[in-house]
Length: 469
Image (tube, rainbow, N blue to C red):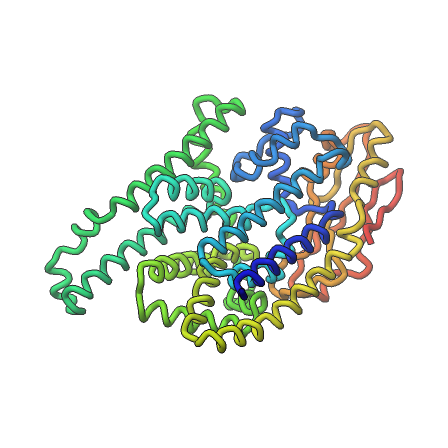
């Protein structure tokens, strides 16, 4: 009964998300890059050139509706990508339910401020989580072909998800070590005498097959995309160049955020009681060491290690570790009696519900209810002139933007040259007979007090100033 109630609650909650974001017409700089690539794939106009170092999957999803692209956000230009993002978010909730075989973990994810906020935007984090879940799910059930396919989709969604292969490698090691410990005890000398490394290679059939198939799909699909875009014989090399750029982007600046940023953002997102259950579940998994326990330990451990060593940090990158986190939370609840388990779950939901309500209130901000860029684009296009841009970014942010103090990006939407082209449907030039736009200095949030109030206006010379709230 309680399982059905949690499923219904999750569905209603997602319906509220859909209703809350139906007027959202702002995007992130990364989102504009993916939409630009969608338009490049449709070959709608030569002004939209493909950004090769962006993973292609989200752009492919949006390419079909953007065949009907219109400037100024008209028609389905803004609506269709929003619907696709929401559908992928809904599928991710269903995937979490299937992976955990538990509705409470799914409800916790749906209540998290990070999920509510990022669900409608054209980003790769939630879709990447979706395909990771499916990849690990089918791997745990020895369905190699489906596992490889979904891992390939995860790689095409976020290049950093190639880390999943390291997690599978560690999992296979842990699983084999567990078997040997059970057979011969914990004597390392005996373990080494059994030539464990040779046995590792002979027992890696699933891992090697999944890795090989997923990487072939990944590289072949990229090569085909680049060939379609006219890169000719150099197409395979663009894949490696794109990966190199993405690795460099993960370490683009010295580490300015505190070392505990990610742990802090986990407990702020899921609340302290949930994190207590998380640690109990991890210790329980280490104790019982079932295959599924070891898979989730490998997933969480490897991903969190790479997250911690990267200097470029954003809270949305944590979506990659949310499924194993929720698994350990659910695992810890299995230690309780049915009545105590129900009482604990209901008590734990109080704080996440409060955070969810606050997050929904943010979507009532004029930033998310006012089609600001449509007005700007219409005013500029009425002049029938091209645009000259001075500055790199214009920063939008809601009034209440202080949920995560160390995340410089969560509520900061940056409009750049690529985004401006998306709204105007015309090229941006350096000089000449043009409408001049001046972007103020980039607002780079390090704490909530640094964002000016009221925010700076959007200045179009010869037309006027525009205020989004």
